Image (tube, rainbow, N blue to C red):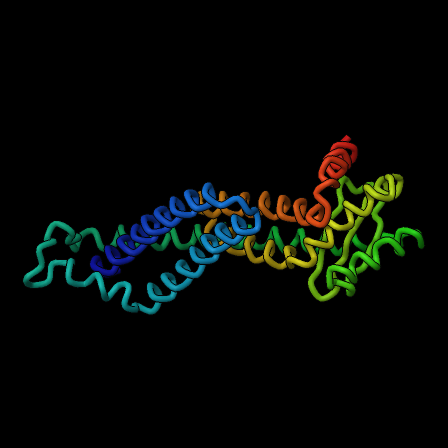
Length: 264
């Protein structure tokens, strides 16, 4: 590999790390200044998706020999350059090229394994949904008006014995899965749980979560990507909690008791 090209790749990667680290710092400050969990979710989403988009653009230019590398040409010892110190001896071309190729292979292997793991989890989820059952009629009658009220009437409700917590899956046909233990709870508590899950459907959180996992797979080497995904999950849950009690602030104490009861 041409030593100048190798230096261009290293410089481009270093620039990516520097710029995304600065962006992470800005996102961290903004998230401390914003009170709304929905807005904090948008801040971390913008950071993660922006990082992933920048990474893909950078990778495309590196493989295509685009302006990212061409822009670094003046510092590689051309006449009139003041950056002679950044020149790479020709004897380094072979080892450095092999090192970069090895790094690329390791990156592809790890990202492929992570992606395969996510696909396997998705298939496992579809398999688990095969063990669900229809809810009792009175529970369905509670669920349907709530879904219609939030504009997600296409949603369906299923019950899964042995599940540890409620969950929401799917995009074209969103599915709310309830553990069978939820059927034993007070009707008002059950409505709060259903509202929380239906707000996940309204926000299309299943889709955004899948996209964030793909971005984290591409950026598995960057701690900011893992932190952003973690914060997105936290803010997503908090936003749905607040939305579930937004129509009646008096419900907050009851909703907190519901969460404690369910956790026990």
